[in-house]
Image (cartoon, rainbow, N blue to C red; front, side, top):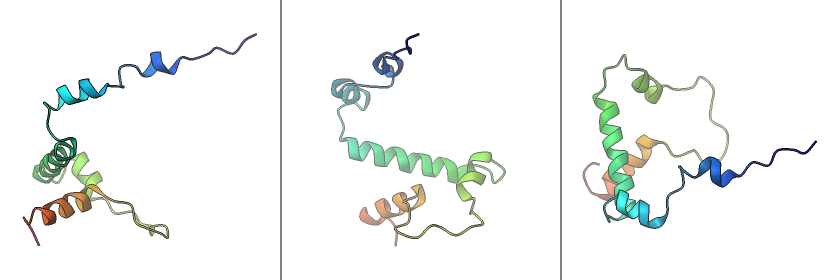
Length: 91
């Protein structure tokens, strides 16, 4: 009996966008600025949520164990704060 061959292009074709489709989606804006603006928008959305919101509780959650050695992972909060510093909007 043969193993079924799965064509990944068929499975994931609705996730893959061409450069032209992506460009039309963001209305011909700079992709880096678009992503940063979306991050800032989401950051503000989370901060306006009530404290009882699941999303806000997950965002503010601190693990009980320490982080592994090495370079710390970048978090959304860190990215937004760095972007705001670059734009000279905060200290």
